[in-house]
Image (cartoon, rainbow, N blue to C red; front, side, top):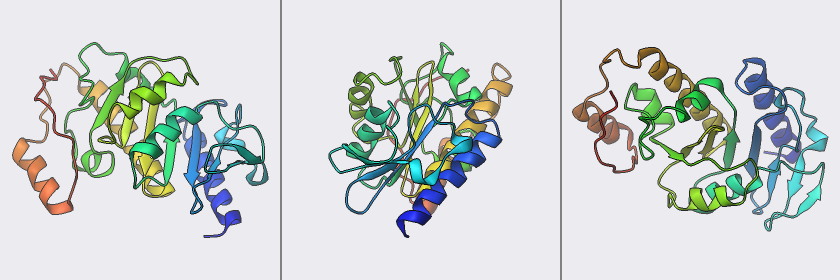
Length: 222
């Protein structure tokens, strides 16, 4: 895909996310890893709903700005996911309401932030880790993500929002959307004793679709 087409794709998906209220104002950022190891990334203080393809930040493989506007200050968390998820070609970070709300609940398991509620949550987002709060742009968040050792493609930043890697921009966007919808379901059903997928049903999904889910201890989500 040409450079121009990749830039258009970032803007198209960004606008879709913004227009559906998944990341307000100038929050959220998107990056795409290129074949030469460099990135295209959304600029700092840019609304995902009004991106200009020509002004997207072009970084080299070392993370230095080559062209375009100054990049998002959230570069460290994107970098950490690319470093630890070898298959990652895109990263999406949003401030979506329900996913942020989920991070503030006291019962959330840091290694399984959501229970197995639906098959598409597991198929698209896998399991989701929760890392502690860091101020936006703090390089320490990269160390927290590296500490997950690449086991999770979807991560929640406490009191901040989701950051999700995918093997394509479309996959990363779809996984982020699935994570937000599953967080919404969890909040709707919290304390109502809902029926989650059983271990056998999860195992069937793993076998059928070749899912690579992190192993974690069972946790009571009630």
